[in-house]
Image 1 (cartoon, rainbow, N blue to C red):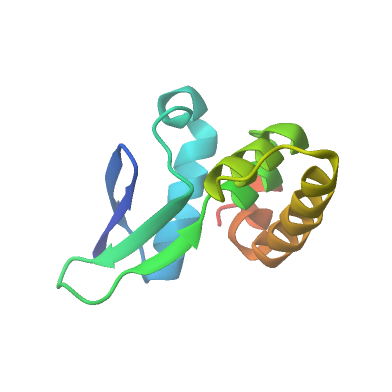
Image 2 (tube, rainbow, N blue to C red):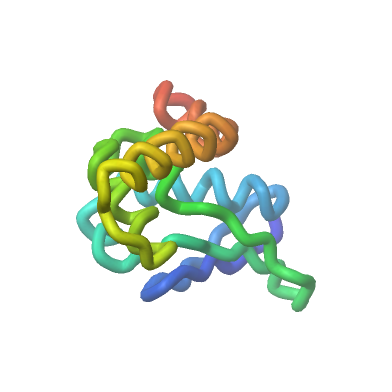
Length: 120
């Protein structure tokens, strides 16, 4: 099986997977299994690289952490507000809550098998 590099903020992991999308799923499985190790080292965006130098695939981290139950809604919204350098006003919190729900729904494919206890 090929190896892929996952890179985000303070993390650089090498993962064996069938393809780059699978490498992202496996990465989130590792994150869930060892959450304390990753909690302060993750950024908002991650990248999956093929080791032969092809263009990376970027992926969102906050919606998947929310989907896995590793962060709650308030923490996820605070992370999105920080990402966009916005102010936590009632109107913006409401807008970011909607954004979180849309992104979390869009990214369910990454985390659904992990959340249900299956091998992603």
